[in-house]
Image (tube, rainbow, N blue to C red):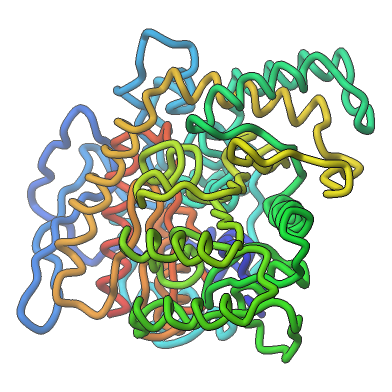
Length: 509
């Protein structure tokens, strides 16, 4: 049974009972007389264009890949990237291989239908919990670039990227080689200095926006948020914190209390959660935050710039500027949690640059080590880090994490990430918005971070499992599907994945 009580990161579809995995679809009764040829740049099993009537969607046309005779649901022909830059070794990870990955010999249209979903043990109105329980989850045995390979021979386009951590793509050679070199030297010293940590610190300070310096590395974003609170408490001599409903800062007692209501009745008296998000006026949110600040005792305000587990909500620049002014007026520090949005996922290096504010503390993680467990805290000029802030922990600032971060930063710079993220945003919008127009499913997000919100959790679960069956790995929680493609994703693979998602959305709407 699927449980999503603590959605600090979205549930990977690969972790739920795989009712849509590895089952063969029935052959269609008839075949189209003609099979139009595909463009040389894309070789999917199916490319469907979608038309919208006033009240419902319908499939308008279907193109067959030449030579296909049938299919296993979810088997895809994955395209290699044609957009890799020859100027840098870092872009060699945009796809796993130059050759196409071939589907099984028995092939037919892999687009899931209502009938086929029923055969997979899940009705279109059912939840993941109603899926057949006699099917084992699949196992991922290999991953490279933007694709995953399973033990049963399937290939999935990865729009999940391990909760958004594998930002450069799986098994990136530059990060792998950097880790291997460090493995041959020193791994962890418990806080004693190493050359690699010093090199990483210099690289990170060069990457951070002007006026910010790295305070410390941590192992997770949750730990980094705890460190941010300790910095704020030490500087202000206060214990309180303000967060916003629907934000996700981690699973610890403190970080969960900031924004996420797990329905368990637990609370911390000094932590105040302000109403926020869809259906709540920004002026109301600001007024409530002002009330909390005027009562005193608040050390920091924590902001997640895009609510990645709460329908993709993001306030306008004026909202964040007013919030920053409130914090300064009442002597509280403004903390931006950029664990998911940082490192160019929304375009610029950090999302706060789009809001016209300068937070006192930046928290980052996930993408900064390309899958290696590492996060960090940066502070603005003028904030001095003191031992009593207790930023150290057993694994913080270890040499292996530093090697991963340094390599990731080097490669990210060579990729021209802002241009790549703009291209990803354009593709997602072009492929999904026409299919969702006037329908009940809402697409929100920006850059390489997108959330699909469904009317019900049952519809979201059904669509999520259909998407997996169609060969695309995503994350989902409650009424939401989340798309987090790697910055190096092959354009053809992103288009194909979005086409599959659009088709599955049509089935459950």
